[in-house]
Length: 225
Image 1: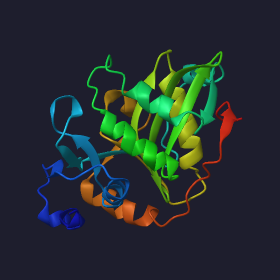
Image 2: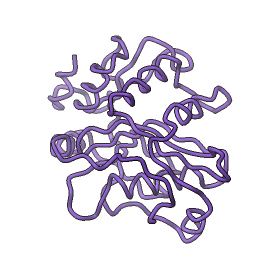
Image 3: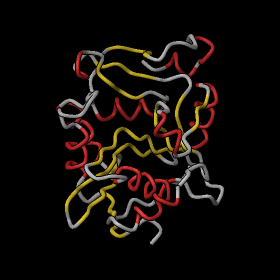
């Protein structure tokens, strides 16, 4: 199903939607990430059929690339951060129908919750006074973390989640790691996200998939603690 993407010369550069169809089965979803794709419904509001996407260029964070402003460093100290303590809560907050551009359907929630149960999907939670006010989730395979969505209910809460994620998955010790964010928005660019041509992304992907995965042991505290 994904073979064409492994031959970038056979995929037009301006294609982002590579394949349409299939099911959000956990094994299929993991295979897609290993081949440089991710699922997103092409129907209204993310409804079926499922599309399998490969943006060109691809948005990523590279080791050492995160930019943390002075004000964001101050914000970090105002929140508590945890990992994998409320995956479903984070996904459902990201799927809030009141959010602009929502695409996370009940089928997506079910698929990624199952991936989390199998140890392949992870969340970062940001709380203030015990209340979940921000977070993100995505899929981890070897040295790849593919970020799917983030949310915030308090200023800078999603940025704090990203800082915690980068500290966990992008060490600056030379490890083969990659944080995929799909598309670079102005918001992500301000934090240091960069764009890679599809061929470069696939080359890096080949290198990181077999690399040791970061620790996903539960954590609670402040980034950098």
